[in-house]
Structures are given as C-alpha cells and as structure tokens.
Image 1 (cartoon, rainbow, N blue to C red):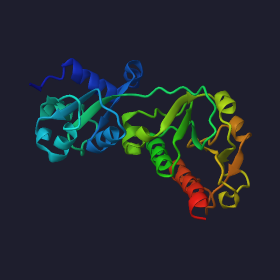
Image 2 (image 1 turned 30 degrees about the vertical axis):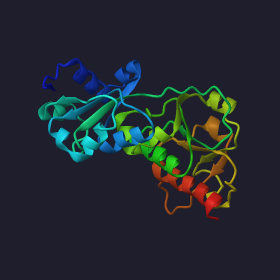
Image 3 (image 1 turned 120 degrees about the horizontal axis):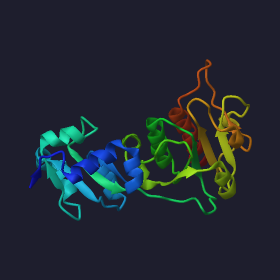
Length: 256
C-alpha cells in the first residue's frame, strides 16, 4: 500500500520529528534523511524504528541496497507526499525514524573529550562532531544551552559522526568539574597560549565556546588557554577553530 495522505498518523509524526524539537524530546526520537546517514547508522550496528521511501525511490539501486539490510519493510509513500514532509531537497527520497541516545554524565571521564559550551549553530556543532570522530575523540560533552546534537540539521552536518560518538547533553559546568578528570584546555583570543607551544600529547578535554561569547568565564578560569595565530581582529568560526585544534592534537601525537 502506498500512503498518499498527509493526515496519516505516521506521516504526521515523521514531519513533527523533523520540525519540532519538543516532539523529538517527548518521543526520544528523531529523523535522518538521505542514504548516507542511513548507511552510517546501519554501519554503526543500529536499526531504525521505521524507514520511509517515496514510490519512485523504491526503484533506486542505492536505496534498494539499504532496504535489503533492514529488519522490516519500509513504508512507501507517494512522491508528492514525500516532497511535502522532507527538509532535504537534493537527497535521495529516503528517511528513517531513529531512537535518540540519552546518556547521563554520572561517572569519571579520564580519556580525551571535546566539550562544547553553548554552541548555537547546528552546522558548527555537526562539523565539530565530524572532526572529533575523524581525529579519534570518542567522547563529546555538550553543556546546557548548546544546540541539540540530534537536531536533523546537526545530523546532516555531522554526516553520521554522531553514531560513532558518546554524546552527553545538557551537562552543567559543575558536572564538568566533578566528572572530568583530565586537564582542561580552552580556546580563547584573550590570553597568551599559542597552541603550537603547548604539549597536547596526554589525554585532555578541549573546550570550544559560544560563537559570540566564547567559553564561559567560570570554565575558562579553570583552563589552560589555547590561542590560534591569525591576522586581523576577527576570530575564526568555532567549527574551523575546533577542527584546527583537534588536528594539532592529532599531529602532536601521531606525526610529530
């Protein structure tokens, strides 16, 4: 059966999960769009709750390959209906409803971790997730006020990196001080501490701050400062700055 009505309960739920953060929080679910994210999700050993494919999409070889790996058949909807609920206009017509992890920071962290303090832009957030995964960081901590890690826009920017990370959300600064037992390093443009002169070869916590305000002063006061050399007064985009820092850490450990 091919679903054609936007009033179908499943379709209404999928659309709400794509657009309404309150619905995502209430249900503990989100939606991934496109074949790349579903492929990454499956490679992480996970299985979606429900997969939705447009009628014409069922003929696509890439979609067919992914469907063959699912534990149940997808829901097929009309092309017209799919276009009304999608948020990605250029991807192959496939989306999946998935469970959102809900990790609680209640134990000591003694390994590398990336702490994201009040970052608002989902593109920056996804970029940092992606770079953290690429440079070997597995633990990411998002403080209260940081954009949602499982917002569909964040997931798209991360290109599936979320699925290889342990992401803790809504963590207070007090909890960071209580549970993070590695040295804290924070990026700042207002202190001496050129990153290339720091020893970053031991486990550490790298803290990246809000796009406008930077790292919270309460955190910053407890950190070793890291600065990046630059010409001019404008600071780097936080996604770029964090990526530079993460790759300098990797360089010192593996390529120095």
